[in-house]
Amino acid sequence: MNDRLLNIALPKGRLGEKVYAMFERAGFECPSIKEGGRRLIFENPEKGVRYFWVKPSDVAIYVERGAADIGVAGKDIILEYRPDIYELLDLGVGKCHMAVAAKEDFTDNREKTLRVATKFSKIARDYYSRLGRDIDIIHLNGSIELAPILGLSDVIVDIVETGATLRENKLTVIEKFQPISARLIANKASFKFRAPMIECIRQALFAEVADKSE
Ligand code: PRP
Image (cartoon, rainbow, N blue to C red; front, side, top):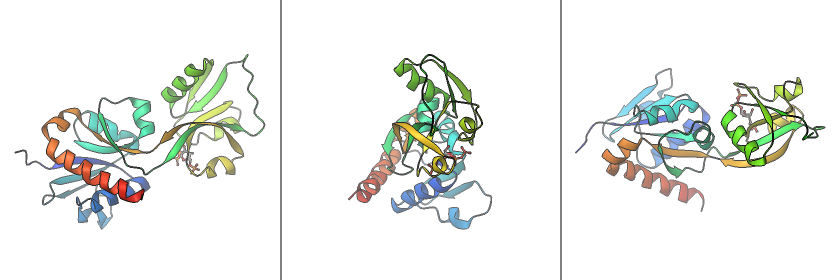
């Protein structure tokens, strides 16, 4: 019997709060997490869980290296970094799309290399290599929408959720090519050695997802 607390990495921010609420409804609550402040780690020994808030793009690293047994990461991060983890469940929250967008008057000249600004270089490379299109990746870390406006790139590859950021910057979607949502992921060794508890959490969260879609 393995009785150490199960380490769970949650993505800090709005999505993380939604995801924690799912764990809470699933019976794995940790009341101290709601106290606010700057603390990052919260435990509920009665339930056998220890949660910590991690930058969303870092969750998969904690899980891959075993600092977290399980965690919640966006499909975008999983596709971009290809961590060596198990993907256990689509939680059905944090839904958005990966898309190509450009200025409203953009027309593609296939004789020229397409300049693509993105935070998701690998996803963008894979997408255009499937199309057989020559591209030049301009890797940025945020405010990607600025790139075509200022002439830094021809298009962007980025996440579109409500579409408000594109609209307010007079950009338009050219193609949505990959649905994204939050996934429950597990460290491979933990999945083996902590199987009963991880399976119990997966099933309880699955019931939450199923409930919501009714
Ligand atoms: C993400 C994404 C878009 C925006 C899309 O940015 O990169 O800019 O959200 O959401 P919307 O379709 O609902 O407008 P984020 O908020 O992560 O900030 P960033 O620009 O710093 O990456």
